Length: 429
Image 1 (spheres, rainbow, N blue to C red):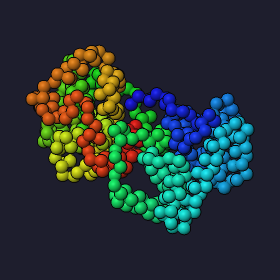
Image 2 (image 1 turned 90 degrees about the horizontal axis):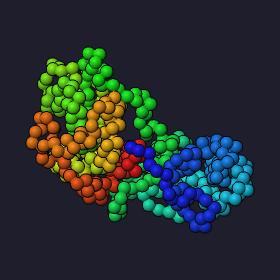
Image 3 (image 1 turned 60 degrees about the vertical axis):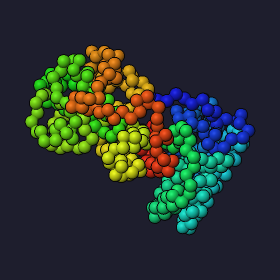
Image 4 (image 1 turned 135 degrees about the horizontal axis):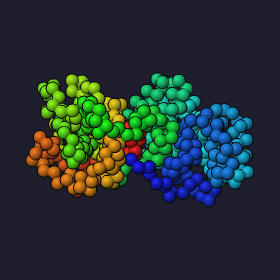
C-alpha cells in the first residue's frame, strides 16, 4: 500500500487550552515524534528515557520530547531525572496542561501495576485504561488500553495476570451490548503508529525478498518454473491470476494454467516449462523446484463479507468469526513464502499503479497496461476452465459494499478485536 499522507490533525502544541491525550497525540505517524508518542502509548519507558535531546535541539517539538522523556523516568522510579526533564520542558514553554496530563496518566499507570501485583485484575484494567484515557473514550482508547495493559503486565513477569486480564476483557465484551458501528473504518491511530514504528514483529519483513525477479530470464535459462498465485480467499487472487495469464499471452510465452484444487488434482506430469497456478492450499506434490509465489491480501473483514455474500460453503459451515480465523491462517501461511504481495485495495483504487508494480517485479515492461485492464474487465464468466470466473464470482461489481454493510455489528466488532494485530500490520486500522 502507498504510504499515507501526513495528517492535517493538530500536533501536540502549547496553543491548545483543552485537549485529551488522544487529541494531543493526533494521528501523525511520521518521524521521531510519532515514534516517541507510540513508545508512550505502549509503555516503552526505557526507549523514552533514551531520547537524545541534543540531537533534536532544532526540532520544533523539543519540549514535547522532553516531557515524554520525563514520563519514561517517572515509570522507572527515577524521580530526580523525571523532575529534571519536566523543568527542561517548562523552560521550553511546554503546555502546562500537557505536562500535568502526562504526569497524572503516569500515576494511573503505576496504580495499575500495583493493583496487578495485588491480583486485582479488574481494578488494574481500570487504571491502565485511565492512563491512556484521560478525558477521552472510544475504540481507539480501548485497544490502546489493552495493549498498554498487556505490555505492563508482561514486563513485570505477570503472565498469569495477562491471561486473567484477557479473560476479564473477553467476558466484558461478550456480556455488553455492541455499540453502533461507525460507517467508516476504525482508526486506531496510536496502535497503528506502534505497529509501524516499534511493533516490527507485526510487520512483514520484506528485506528478505528480492526487488525484482526476471521471469523471462529464468525461462531463457531453460529452467522449469511455477508462477503461483496464492494467499487468502476472496482477496483478488482470481483477478491477479487473469492479469498474469493475459500478460503471458500477450508476450507469446507458452504456459499452462489453472486452479490447483481441480486442474492438477491428480496430474503429476509437467506439460510446459512455465505453469501459472492459482491455489489456496499447500501442495507439496505440485509446487516443487523453482517457484515464484505472489500472494494476495485484503482487509480480513471484507474477505469474510465477500464469502457471506457468495454464501460460500465453508463460511456457512464455520460462521463469520471462525471463517476470519481460517482466512487469516491462509494469509499467514503463504506470506511466509511469498516473494511479492498484491494488495487488493490498491488494485481497486489505483489499478494502473498496482499492475505496473506487479509487472515491474517480474521484469516485464513490454505489456500495454491499459489494454490489459480492458481485457480483464471484459472477461466472460462462462469459461471457468480458462478464467476461473463464474457468474456469482464478483459479489459487488460496483465496489460499493464493505464488511459494515454485510456483517452483523457483533461479528464485525469481534473479528476486529480478535485480529487487530493482523489488521494493523497490513494497514487496515
